[in-house]
Amino acid sequence: MGLICALTFHNTAEAIVYTASNEASGNQVIAFDVVDSRGRIAELGRFDTEGVGTGALLGNQSAIALDVCN
Image 1 (cartoon, rainbow, N blue to C red):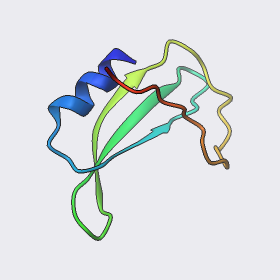
Image 2: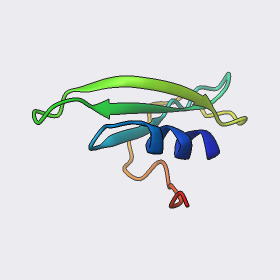
Image 3: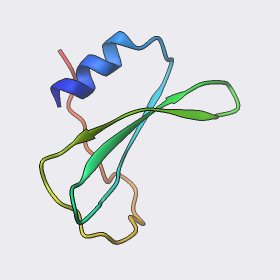
Image 4: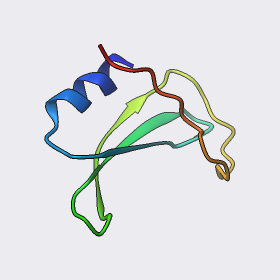
């Protein structure tokens, strides 16, 4: 979680979107910068969760729960 908090505070984006890869070989959190008012995004980075996913498509909202960075 520390990497994500650091990324959030050092980025000038107005919004950052997070999702999970759910890869069976090694799950990652993927961060995207919302680059304009039309909602276009650009990948900022991938961060290992040190866990594994199921390898299936994620068809759910709220797949990631974030804590507030202090």
